[in-house]
Length: 123
Image 1 (spheres, one colour):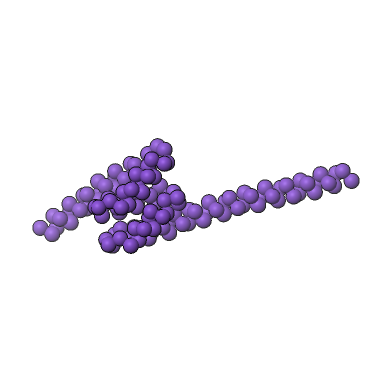
Image 2 (tube, one colour):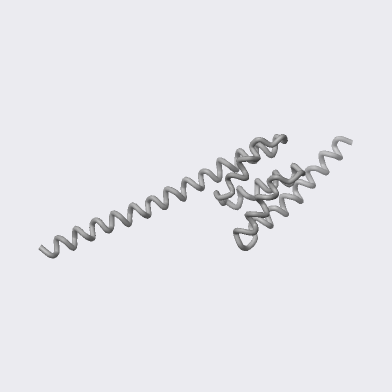
């Protein structure tokens, strides 16, 4: 009997994961993000875990607060999924931040040298 219950949970997880991934990768970031965010607090742990995994796969660091809250979930798999998602999304956020800083630094660098060149040409 225990094996049947475990199989049902595995099947439910696969179904929920497929549904969450379908939502997470669907068109329009805002509605899908909100739906996944809401699913992280669902009453069924299978849905919570699947939503967290879909958020991680989606790679949207703006959903980090919702995933972070799931790190205190009562179910191990939800907590572990949340921890992995937090690490993944934090890395993405840091990469985006570094890219933005690099772009701003390059622009400032280009302005500095172009103004020096202009000043040197006028002499």
